[in-house]
Length: 117
Image: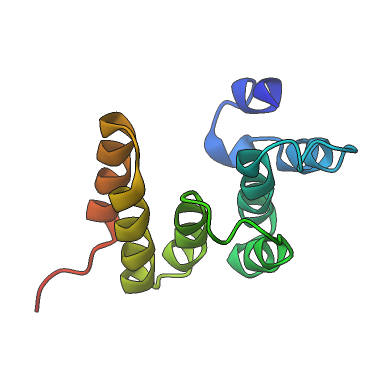
């Protein structure tokens, strides 16, 4: 997984097919909640937000995870639905257990929060 990310010269050149294939190995995607939620992120990168959403909706039992809203935020953000993405990021930022994680999420929130009218 790290090699697929580390050998790409740009984000768009990342080996998303390879990464998705690794998530397909027996036991890999179910190894942790993070792994289960990261697979739909990779699907989004390769196939687009609608496919990532479908892959995420196939996950059962993680809807109460504090990581769920972060995973959910990516698809509306990439689809231009920034208000929806901002709402999801606000939820996950409020649940972040560490200040560094909270700062990272808030910086993402600043990228998608609609400007006041």
